[in-house]
Amino acid sequence: MRTRLKQKQETFCVEYFEKGNAVEAALQAGYKGHGIRVTASRLLTKANIQARIAELREEVKSAAVMNVQERMERLTEIARASMIDFVGMGQDGAWFNIDKTNLNNVAIQSIQSKTVLGKEGADDAVFIRVNLHDPIKAIDLLNKMDKIYTDGYQDNRVVNRNVNIFVIDGETKDLIGQVGERTKLITNGHENN
Image 1: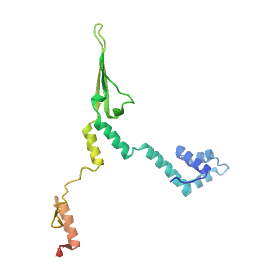
Image 2: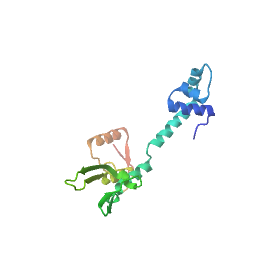
Image 3: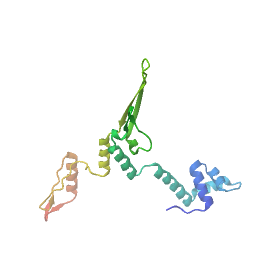
Image 4: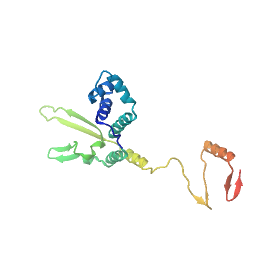
């Protein structure tokens, strides 16, 4: 929810955010007088002014940083891209179609071209090499975002209503031992120390 301010205060916040100079922002907002420095300093101490400046920072940050949906869409474009998306065939041979209308152009990692001059009246030849981003890496990142993978080994088998936990490393075993020393574990109505 946006902080509500008077028009002069809003203008001050926007000008201060853009320029970083409180006195100049106060002048642009229409504050006048010999004590403009004091006025500018007072404005910066008001809670609602500070809140609005923080909101402006968040708005810029939100617009500049990709959200999760955008990241997933970009990675999906990379994962689905194929060289066939960029190659066309004409009468004079193969050509590449790479422009803003091509949805998968984010999948392109690099483009290199080399012109070989024709000898003795022969036409020049242009060689183009297009490298795509690794689709397997994009799929891997999408799987991690969707939490398809688990970190480490996990065993959730239930046997006679008891959960079996297999301890793999010594550090975890020591931690479990410390917990056992501090509390008494009760399993099936019997005390275990």
